[in-house]
Image (cartoon, rainbow, N blue to C red):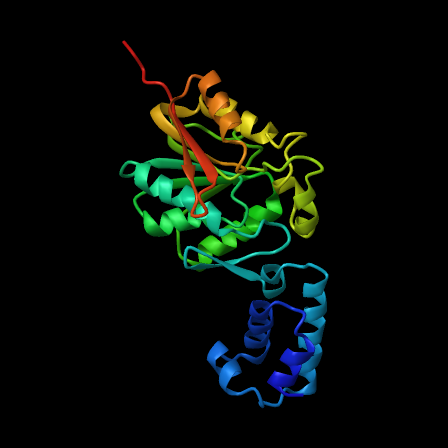
Length: 272
């Protein structure tokens, strides 16, 4: 069977998935696929191509099958123990880079693969970063990704801020992409292979967002900032949570699609 014949027999798969699969299994470039459609594929490669194509048809994400995902130009190991990093989450990184003062102490909650912490450490090496997750398996993936990229990030197993030692005068920045999908949400069917505990957060998808806001205000330094990713229709609720907890400078930031994606707030100034 040739590359062209395999492509034709699997035309029901999206073209990008076919090309990713072929380049991965055959160790060739995309340009090679386009210029060598008559390249003969050996039987063992055909068998692997067909097996993975079947998994893709079942809905398994390519990132888990390949074992890696790129985030802000950084290649990260991913497994079903962690969420697949998504482009919209890059907004969290951009905001932290913009607002974090020099040598700031940054705490990331729910790190998963370590994508956010690793991107921050790569682009702002002056930052002192601690990252947490409730899942030991996720923390092992994050630590491995950190070692591969030669970075220095402290990882702690914790249920949000429960087990986190807070610096004497508080954290400069707390950042999180927590679970924010409502129980029974129709979108969960398409996310069935990703860890549900990292996606679902109560009847309205707000339980973890509320817990983080309530805890974070007690751990931020005066004027320290909290950045939370949330669903496109949750900005009003998150702003209300921050206001109820005495935060100021509350603002919602839009992603590249123009959707409300991250809401930030600052801890109150200390007054004499």
